[in-house]
Length: 137
Image 1: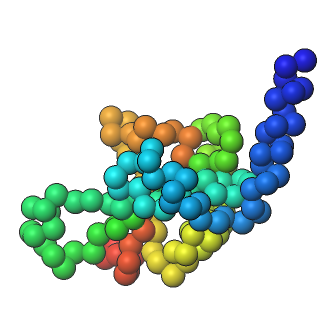
Image 2: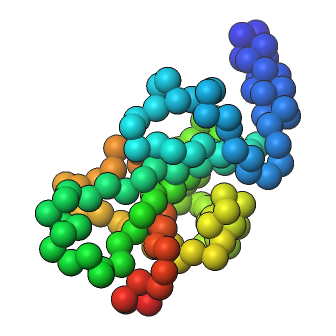
């Protein structure tokens, strides 16, 4: 009986969310957010958190002309998410998410870290955004 009462709430919650990604007002998430989180977008299907990528000053001063990623898009499914769901996000969907978040004209790279340097969210996909064409592209 309890399962039946929970399911409609989830449907109602997702029904009030927009079909396309929309920015979440800062006052709704800033108090609980890490310092480098600067945007949150949400839709019925996805939640995107956009973080500023920070570098140690020594790295920035050693080669100021290097093109480095400036943002990281952390993409998860809205609601319950699993690693299998995250892996099912296609390249076209990732490109559409990047476009909806206003980064359509920017280069982005998805990075797969080594096992000992894995990110703490296995159910998320991470795109690093470059403002300019990376050397390797």
